[in-house]
Image (cartoon, rainbow, N blue to C red; front, side):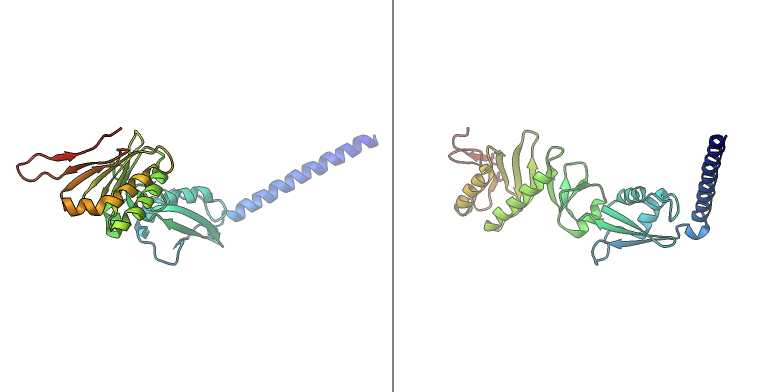
Length: 259
């Protein structure tokens, strides 16, 4: 008998506890749904003190705000972050709640370096490929043209930076760098000359070929002036040059044994 009474008391206590928890949960839910916690302000700041250049209030209001759901307590911050990272020019977003009805969103903008491929996408100084207004990017900088197989973006960027340093020794710079689907490198310099560097055989292949060109470049310019259209450095013991075609003449090519 005593055992039955004890079991009944335990059951009653458990039920009471469940009811109390339900009431508490109901009360908490009632509180967090109060109008005072409805999101009224979304504060946008840049990751650096400089003003955001391309992300403006109109873009945010149209592209990000309609995707935000919930209030101060119930808004999913990961979803909010994703909404802002879908906005053109936004590289990364972080979100914090600000009591009692605000969100602070910190945005890191892409800094465009050039175009990627031939479909109008841009590549940033960090090697991220993104889609944004090309005209806006051109207002910021003279865009270089980079291209390569999918997934090679950071490799191509790294090689571009090396080539830029190497050719600075003769006061030239790459306007474009291409890494073909056959894994061969080529570039166009800002004097209009095309340079074929070919495939990488080891970690020093490109540097050796560029160094060979840098050594003989002053002599080439002295003899050919501005008439060199392209140079092919894929020869083990020489190079091939194609000269610009004067009016009425065929293009001329000079080469030595390529392997």
